[in-house]
Length: 384
Image 1 (spheres, one colour):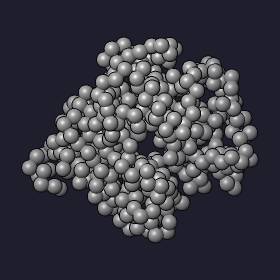
Image 2 (cartoon, rainbow, N blue to C red):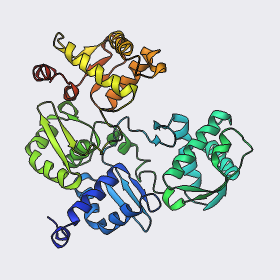
Image 3 (cartoon, helix red, strand yellow):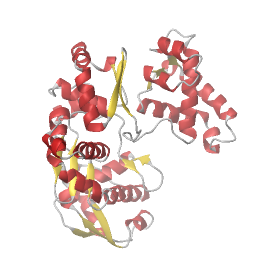
Image 4 (cartoon, one colour):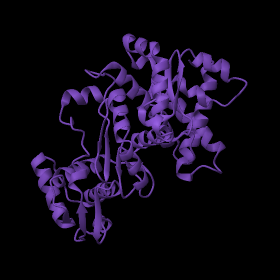
């Protein structure tokens, strides 16, 4: 227990709330989360010490902004999300536009017209060797990138709205930019190729082993034994009690350990941008597919299914749930199967390959979602 926690009985809970929020919202602003920013500023020293010493992250806090730099480990398949209509990942062209916007606004000005900003983006693209067609798709991508910046507090609309530009290339608007915040968006080591290779992959490079393992536990749904070297796995198992206590203090999570891997379980179910089980056709189909695959696992030497087998199962599930699933999903089983597979891969419940004969491999954590009480124990032992 820290001195702050001894002097203030509420400090421990407030520090945990601040750490949980920053983990899910690496950019926090006074406009969007005034109460949380005050909490982060109140406990800046303690929370910064947690992140720096235990995870190798870095916390920047000023009067109206907090930015958590997660430079120890960058999870795969963790895209930026567009959340203004339906939640979806940003597309490749939108990422390109976002990068160009950040490049041409990080140094100012504070107020700019949309037309001038478009000219700046085109100049930045030419300088970077990026070919822009100037068509409707690019205008929509630019608007999506701007809307993401507005949502994150990096910009705001002063006059008119940028949305009109997506369908009218003559439309204009006036934006207030926050160059100070925009400069905080990229990781400080973004241009370091060695950093990118280690942080974005399974190799930890020069990162201290315990920080890397903790970051994997915090950022990934499951850390499997195969994700680690013998040395790394041994270190984690030896210090599991200490690691569990630290992660509980910081985030209120519990480590669930088995021979095949370790998962950090959040009892509140909020430390994830993809909740599961979840509603909707894809989420329901994923849960039912797990049930089918785990049941079939009893008769297989390996938990591997071909693409054709998965599509057939999804097609049968679609027929059985035709009255409750979305029509466009029911009418396209291959597309639905691909969406389900994507979801399971994102959650680290399955692994997918380019080999259509060995397309989907069910991973051990999937057995947590098998709901048959009469079979789950025996099947889980076989699956694990």
